[in-house]
Image (cartoon, one colour):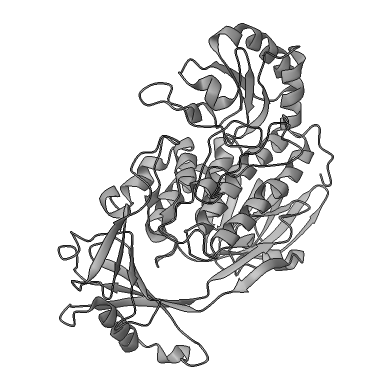
Length: 514
């Protein structure tokens, strides 16, 4: 008889989304088991953009500095390049429309190749969870009490009993198919070949170093580009190809190097072939994010084209939304109905990301409106009747506000502390110093609900205007940093905060599954 394991949450998939799911669960005190069918982390460059919101999440979970050290220097990541060839004299280098520091966040976005990012996340996840590579989900079943999964771990069959299963097994995973969940959207939008190669170009590229290198029509096929891996020795070239005209077998090592040399524009460069991959830009979103006790996250739930680098970031936002909810239900302070809010909060954002990846998010266009400004609407958010913002460019323009459903805005509370640093472990009620005594009384009553809650008085200039409250007004922020409830004036009774906390923890929603 094989080994049997019991764990609160089984995470299928050991990419960035699955690994951060484990990190997030541990942040809230929940154990998990991560199973990944591959033997190790990614060994080929993939997603590279780490958006501002993702860096904020990494900051909340203590990973931002480690990821920063593996990222491109800011001097390179703030530019894009356009020319007929990579090394030719005819080129333009343009500053991207974001700076190293923004007034809307304590962080800045990064360019970090996924092959460099994943080892950082894996090292942290191994300390936070039971992480098994060379372990593949074979089958699973579920009932009202939990999930039973059969896992092949390096040839040994293991039975895993879990309260919940999070499927982060990517676009080619089988969990979604087993659940019978279909997808909607444009689908496959083309075919591309990526060639990873080595070339000592650091000195020659020093004055033109960028995050992405677009090639105009020239020696390389139209639509070709280079992306920086380290901007020194490792590079990635992406070219379109037509499988009806060019068989995959024709893309040999020799042919790949021909394409690379054409794009470089200098045949004297010593180039070494490191590998190639075929891939299809795709935009699809799962029609459902939950089936009973199983939840979809990351590429298992949604696919975006590479434009804007939104895919991985959207997946990381998925688990940031789901981790605290699972933890609350497992601990007992949140109602099972809170889990019903995962899909209505995350799926609309994925649809918006998929649509933006069809063109509006194309570099060098900013995406702050999408990653910082997207608002949630669910039974756990209490609408205060205020109008939603109407930016001229919803993808690029972020309008900071503390309207319920929105990310609580960043405001410096000192030289290095942001309002965002107050969030992440429990519900937080914010007010001004004058309103703090009444808030403390309300918090004591609210704590009888069992929901973790703390209070903070904000003394920073601009607080009232930025958060949309008057003297003594209160803003209730969830563990994920999103506003659950707001009153612009002092609460009429201290019991209003307790009611808002209960709603934020799912006690006012109707459950469709336990």
